Length: 221
Image (cartoon, rainbow, N blue to C red; front, top):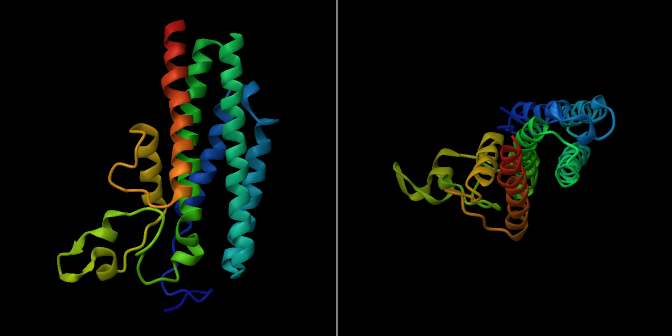
């Protein structure tokens, strides 16, 4: 049975909505000097864009949905990078207390995971609007195990091909979480250059927030 926009198995959008709203909510936990404008500004913009993205998706306006999706992630990325820059400046100038450093580093680390998970979800294999039009996910920037492991019920097909498997937001969240903790893709090899560069950037942010800044804050305590 086809959905309202002509897709037999539409990809659920609610997990990524929860993810971007959580990232916007984390912005409130940052010290004042590390936020972009008033605390409600970034969250308000994200909520408004989420509503537009949801409505455009329901109405089948895929181009507007994709552009709005990119705008959401861009806003969250600006907030993340601004907070990281201000955290570094506060560390150098000694204008941020040790508890604030610890809190900010933890918030930025979590935001980093959510933001880059959303980037991977939005960019991989043309994005969700393109992925959901395929019966199975067989090509993309990431080589998920389901794409490489033979199906136990069919030696001539992978698990993805045999079961019609496609990645969802949780799969990309797992990739982003591993990148921020292990600084590597672990069991999901990276195939495309854009994904490699993006994961390198995520790892740099994670190293900065966790290893350098938290370590410095602990020394101050």
